[in-house]
Image (cartoon, rainbow, N blue to C red; front, top):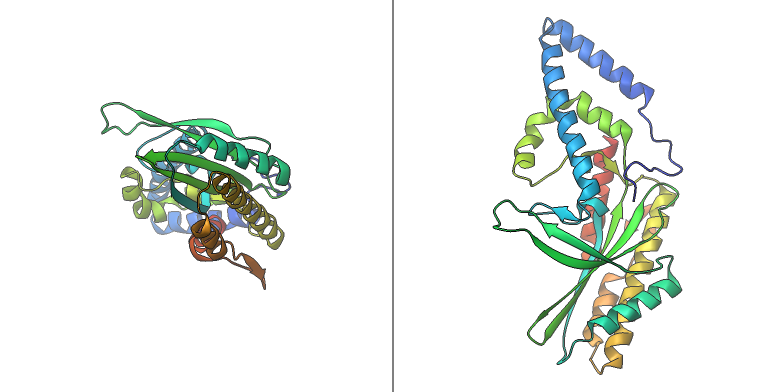
Length: 286
């Protein structure tokens, strides 16, 4: 995944954006007798530096993070599902094999590869690493990449299988310019959350391109990936004599994804994820 790859989208700073910024800052400079230039310089340098650090960190955070947001490099969560079952022996490898085979047969995802991510929380005495499985689809024509993250764990004889579908866009140059150009106005609204590591600047400039065709492409890929994983799990669990009625019910409740009148309507867990995506898109357009 390339954070700067917008595919068929002309990723640029718009002329009207630059013109408006010049007019606003010239007016404020004259009104404050030049003091505004000092404020603009200080806040824009700080914001630019922090943003650059966040982008560089995101590129490497596929393998590391600090306390929260371990998967932020891959974008926003489109769907997060977990199924818990009981079995006396480990069958996780068989489930993963079934899922991988189904993905290769039905989707462009060709393989599941190991992904080791370490938590470098400064409050921990030592870093903790965990291994996940990752499958990545090719980007849409408008620069949105879908990534499947799988996780499995055990608690005695109770076994948990969890997966997320992540949608990652590209860094919007126009949004990046606006964030830096208007940093004196917005700085104090995000700096506290940023220092607490509860937020990052990357989310303010990364966009999932807002268009009907991209919505169709992304929704199709999300549904295809989720449905393939659901079906593969049913096959693998039933093969080992495990009741899957609750898993089938969960699939029915969460996979009612429809596109109507230009709006994406999704059920239960997925709806919350779509709301996050919508917020990310609106934030990037602002």
